[in-house]
Image 1 (tube, one colour):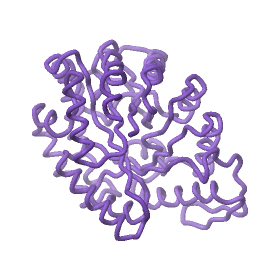
Image 2 (cartoon, rainbow, N blue to C red):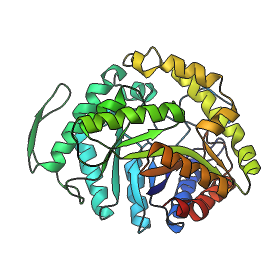
Image 3 (cartoon, rainbow, N blue to C red):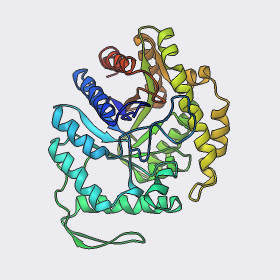
Image 4 (cartoon, one colour):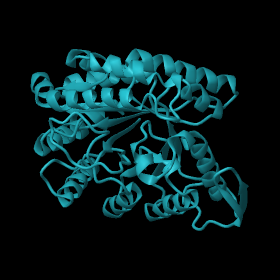
Length: 360
């Protein structure tokens, strides 16, 4: 069982960028010292800080615009942690550059890299990069095809709509053979069977879906996996908000305001992005936005969060692991970015030392 942390590298309102990096490395050190399997860095762009009470904007204010560079620093500092990006937003990247950089970190770490990929659900970063979100699906697939070809062939050529390469030899090749473990973020109903048919492990979350809806989507993923004739079992890692307090009551109280702010932002993001070019009806953005707009903290605690004292969080995560047949749990430890630093770090330490050992 992979047990890790998501690192959003929060850029807190009123603090410096350096403070954000310091907090991120303190979290990585807590994960290493606590014996967690790994850390997964987000990828955020143009994520400036704002008032904790501001429910506008998209995503969490963050300094993690270059997650592979931060990953390199983490594996150089710590000896056992695996590192991944959840996720590399491939349509915003050049595939050859990503292939080179991920392979380089894989060598620096001696094979401790996980390769998480996705296209991101919102268009704001695409606007900033000057790339059309309407092209995100085709760019994602071409980029992934190029990266895998670069890693698994001494030389390769490629002819696509967005990328063309002739007799290219990418150096270095990854340390792990044939390449670091690949995991695709699946967030929409249409994505799950597609990834299952492709035989690729998934990274899933409880932002746009609750537990019952996610269970249904994972059934579709596993059915498609089996029908395609892939060997072995489909592999699922879950990203889930986790906050471990001294008691259930204290955990719920400490995380409530920040968590509700996050889900109000998410609801608005779904509604705002429903009509952007590249969004599809299958993504149900309007429906998700309306559901989240009306959601209560009690709803979240029941179906989307693992908050409480160590015993309660352990019980919840064991239940979820069994229900969803998970191979990994990755804890999102500061939903909304508004929980104080000391409380976040205390929660991470409790998660690593009191909860994680019981999940393995």
